Length: 547
Image (cartoon, rainbow, N blue to C red):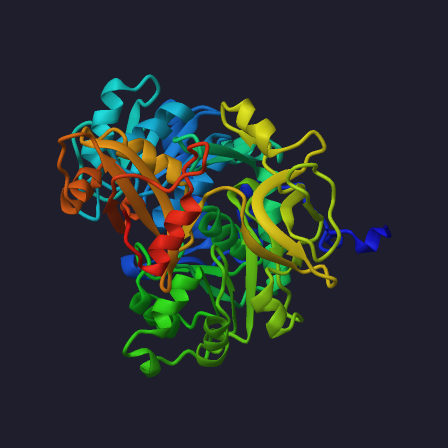
């Protein structure tokens, strides 16, 4: 079979890969655009120029060194979007430490696991988030932790047992900015700079390790394909704890001198449009659910969105009508659709500005430069012909070195030839654009968040009244998918839906709490007794009886 008929595609070579660290991106922006806004946090009323950001991140880096943080130490950040997040991102990179991104929706059990698994020595956090006592939870973790020694709280207020943001900046044992710069210059592109936790099929999240080289080059390639320039302002409602925010939204923007705008601490449709109008944003990055929410605002037509021209949509399939509305009603003619995963830094496929509307709706584009993709038979591993459904695999500079402290999971994900097996089912077309058609793994994508049912099932099994739990996703117009749980109770036990949700609250992230809960007597199974989740999904979608 001719090579051209096989489902394999290779991106071009332009722009070339760069041998840079995360801090090198900021240094270049400081050299080229010192007084230009780098971060605009609308909700905090704070603007940092590139020069301000560099100076402040050096102050934080100095405070970390004075607190005993060393190269290679893991530093956690458990926070929603704020300007300090970006400062910490660069401060940690300057001293060669490793940033551990922690979802702010995580609760006590999840926080404790990530801290211990990664060996975090210090944790940055906001004392409260959505009425949850984050500092209280962190204090519980630190009592029994083998690793966690320091808590740094955002804000001016001082709390017992933690160091406030101002106290960190004002640490009397200062390391000079020149010495900090020398440290950052010594950081190698192949050094680990980030650990990002993704939900796992075995009940606990896995820590994807990413290098300077991974993140910087992926950021550069994405912004280049989108044609972002120093004149752009990127409205960023996606979370910083994820690659979408940290890499594409910040490093991608900074690589060309563009500004990153935080409209709110977490996503809010009105705040996004307010920020676009107020700051003159030219781009918005988000998942489909965010754009749907903005378009459905009752006051949407009152906004002047003439400054918008482009943006990125990823994290979930993009319905044609939504993309059309974004282009027509939000003035985003150059909208691009992306596909990726944390383990690939994150983006491997992206539509171009020359792609047709049909290509942007029906596919997730073609490989970025310096990236190879192929579609293989999930059983044999052989490359399939174009037009045949199989597992999507990705190879190139963007593939992570591996999962933190988990060689077995790494071997299962990355084969001997360096191909990352995504677990997603895909079809490569004759134009080398790729359509994602399903998933080998039972992951649920809710509003751009990847959720693995096994993780939730394992928690539900800790509830005394529950004998067995099966969790799966069902279609949802707003979020793409919603979680549904079918539970069997132990003999004589009683548990209503409200009580179950109350038991989940505070122990697992709110987005992991099932929206639909059914108490059933049994499950549909095969003749051998294997549970058939696809039949449960069919029953829910069809609205039939559960029993």
